[in-house]
Image (cartoon, rainbow, N blue to C red; front, top):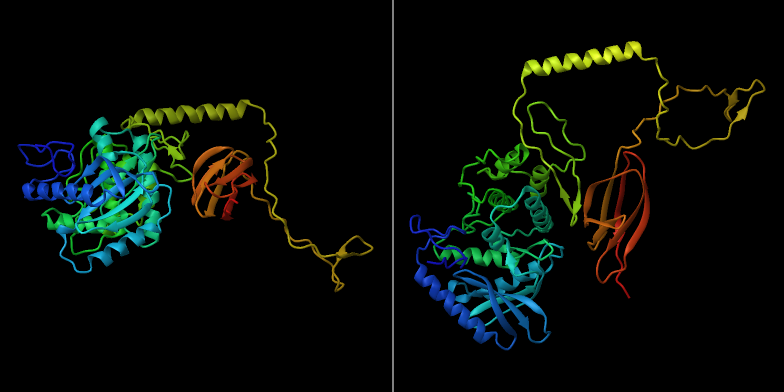
Length: 472
């Protein structure tokens, strides 16, 4: 029997649950009838506005279509939700409130809501078409993803969630079915407006909201929080890496995962929301080790490589597997040999003059004109001699130490450094080598901002007040 929720996988005869989405078939007949009635109503009541092509995904209470808007001839994604699942007099007003809140989200990884409305039998909305394959379908087709591919998806979705959370908007129904992938490999998050209504409809159908991606504290009568979204994202990442979802209230993770990934997942999957990371951005940063300086390699711990490059604006990491503890005797013998060689080298090698270190010049106080006494001692205007104070040494930095860029613009835009796409604004802690770099911020419909910036070793340079002006 095909699962009526995801309509992709089969329901196991042993566990009576869907092997893909975990749906339990309690009350399947009634829910299938609701789904079929909803499909008929969508084709009949929306025929004048849309030409419905195919079904992208469907659940017992809602359906997602690929469609064409007849008035504008644009390809859109059409979402419909049955009114029969609600007994609320203020449903129309509440639906408009949820949709209006979603339309203010303007982020490159959030699918924008274009238009919404209602009919006698259903509620509907249309969004931009970004692809017809969800992350759920991708996992069903390919199985687990490698660490780099998973991190690219996690960083993009976390960026969208963080953007929404700062504006007081929580998704509340995060799952692989709400994440869509385009042909270029970019990830997009949808379902912000529909999440709360879908949660209630799912709960009335006898299923837990957001299950099996819902947090332990999640309940129909409670409003979701950013910690709820973080837990769901951790479940998705666990599934992307291992092919399985974690057991509820169990923070154990497979031993084959890198140590820093396992530690980040354990914290984000904590049953208590207070024990999770302060934000989804902190969680993904812990996953990808995006600190400016990597921790030193200690014998007996995994060796972590620095990012090797960028692809699609996302960080690429290479993680060396854990090699196990070293023999302490061999380690001690190796250290002794190295120290002996260093001592011999220092004794027999003639001393060489140290190269001049590159210094950073710190401007001193404002110049004050002074007179010079006949003896050559400078005096200030009051007539008292000026005694030279102790000289402070300038801080010495390595000429190869990278600088750090902080870039933000209003509205958001794509950031290019030396004609290479490195991400979207806001962008923080971007490491660049010392020297001159060409900075550009672009967005369709706006004039591009460009500037040549000179970055000194170790300098933290901010360009956070960039304003993109509308193109004429």
